[in-house]
View 1 (cartoon, helix red, strand yellow):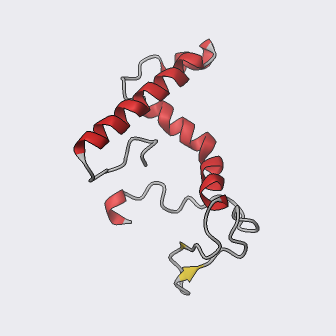
View 2 (spheres, helix red, strand yellow):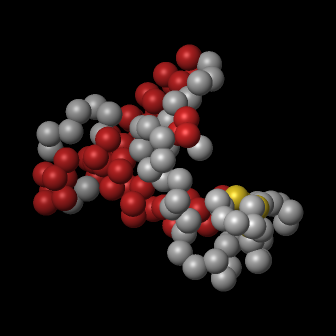
View 3 (spheres, one colour):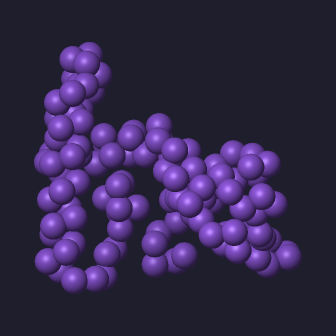
Length: 113
């Protein structure tokens, strides 16, 4: 959500502004580094780069997920809404044998999670 610009970030306002400013700077650099044919797709984007953020997230979701789960403690749990309640990773590191990256919460509004 932070990357996609959809995070509610109910923390300290100054930190929120710093984070958002940093993300704008990062995505501006990313946009400038794109090949001209791809860059033209984002030509009319405002300074928030929401479309570029969404596209970046779609392409990099798995790598972010791997980074989170590969560093997770052995007793880490990830919840899924199913009849059994909490589902533990069968192999806690790098979501082995879990299939595709879980996206069940990607587009649920944050306040409903």
